[in-house]
Length: 311
Image 1 (cartoon, rainbow, N blue to C red):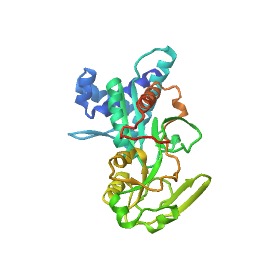
Image 2: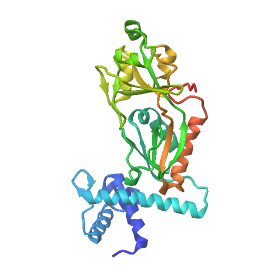
Image 3: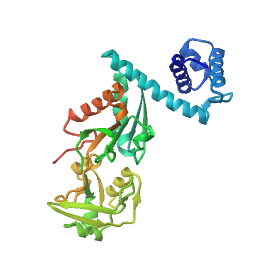
Image 4: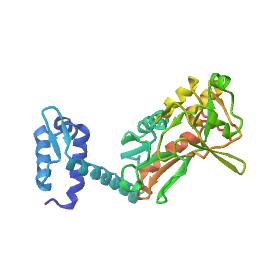
């Protein structure tokens, strides 16, 4: 059996092999022969007693056991990088794998472009962006940083507020001209409201606050979707009233394509937070990325989509 000291080297080798996707590409990276790569993998598999990769004439792919090994190897290698930077007190550039989780719409529109800028500044970083409606539990080790709306539900995580945000009710002027503008929350029941089925939020239940009074309205309509961008496009087409985050609709409110309704009523907060597990509290990778995100939002009074904050 290999000594523990050889384990990180094996993990780094297998992680590189999975990333390159072929023996020949890995051999070029390591400046060795292709047979040497194949032999090293065979020795690993013999030591572990399992196949780690499926081989075909065109490609390689991890077996279920290989997926488990790869997932843990990447996490352990990243933790080793964090530990070495911490104990050496080096002001070195962050490096290693960073797994970022975000909601689909915000992830595509805002986080993906920011990741592009981040890796240009830190070329030794490898970033994986996962887009999910619901955040994975921190206990599952499925992400390093999660960007979410509203208050984080878990107590055993570290959070940093990136930007204020709120949800607004709006509709196209043409829809309001045909159906009228609601003046009080209860009048929403007389309108076609576009539903968004996302996360664990109660579908079709809108809560509006005015002063100390909270009103809960059960809305209905003939259109619903799990994609917020589609819902906004339906509202733009005059199909009804939609509740959507301000960052997503501010440009349409400014241009007049959408008009806010019930302006004096507030909806539950949807502030944007970065969330990461406590095990990454000293991670140089996480700290650098969260600082980059915070810097982006703090430098301007607007979100990347043109959000004009009015608090």
